Image (cartoon, rainbow, N blue to C red; front, side):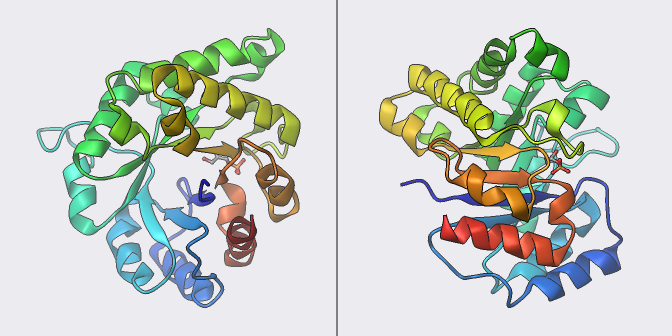
Length: 253
Ligand SMILES: O=C(CO)COP(=O)(O)O
């Protein structure tokens, strides 16, 4: 049985005061349940504060990206060792915005996935096709290739802990969600690629999220699908009421 995982990706939103108010508003609204997991991925300057604020709450804190090296002369970057040292537990890797605006390649994503495991961080590995690719019927090939490259040389023990997020690029921030059936079909394809790479039980234990205009109004249908084990949420994770509703759906489903 896979635990649903609801993760909020705040992207480049909120001031420190707003981030702290969000955590205060969320406290008491989340069910402390072993049946699901809830994660917030704030901008880097708020990570350490939010790790402190999350203590005693059923919520984990994750980063939105990281460098692949533990340290070095990489001005402006944040390393996996730094994230581990402040108590972050998750890291989003290969988000389509990182791939598009910061030229993150599949090979770079793979190096970061390896680094995440080295520092005991759970990677949320993002994959997804553009609208053009979907219209050209390339979704399955593109997403399969991204998954294979992200998991290259990752052993079974680590792979079993990973989270994969299927985020069709055309559904991000557009209000256009993939239908639950279409999203599930791609998530099932991802699981079949993972079954080819690893043993069946490992592929069955890897959690696969859907992301792209997820809201309280559509989360239950998405979570009811056989291969969707959670959601990676942008816009609707910024408001404590709506994020709490998403987390509640995760805990119920
Ligand atoms: O990119 C996303 C999460 O990583 C999805 O963003 P939206 O939920 O705003 O569409």
